[in-house]
Length: 214
Image 1: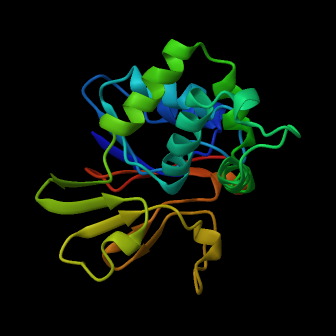
Image 2: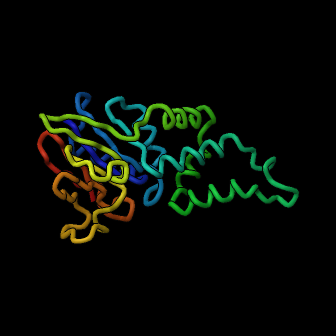
Image 3: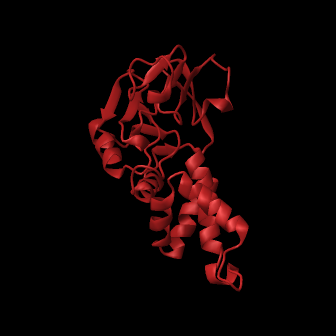
């Protein structure tokens, strides 16, 4: 079976419960369409490491992975004391970058990443740089799907079913079912607000069945 979820945002226990609920097996595939890090939970690094160790779970980069990669490389390669001026103040570009990441809910990720040995930090940044996708095009039971984090990548392309995360369904105008998957013609929105205290949602492409973890 082929499953898709999005925007886990560090909620490691919900992630594990989802795998249990769908009875995830070695011959299944799970696409996570961005944003496993930051915000609500403090288990983003744990989720990322599990994905790295599970060949049939595929991560599509979200904006949180993109800014995290930049920040992680900065944390790895910058000697903070040596980068400070005589007053102990960091260079402006470092302050701006880390402030932006923290404002997006990045502090739990920063804290966990800094606790890792350098070899594991390097493995994570290599994974994010080289082994993740920006989108995926797949066909299941004769239906074409485009999986990407944000619909802006594909604006008006609806000759396939477009599945996106990024915007929690509670923020979609005229959606009568906030924090549930919202299927608007050929566009499925599957961010169910896990990063804001809501649900983690997933859908099975073969059956259309939806799964939710509160």
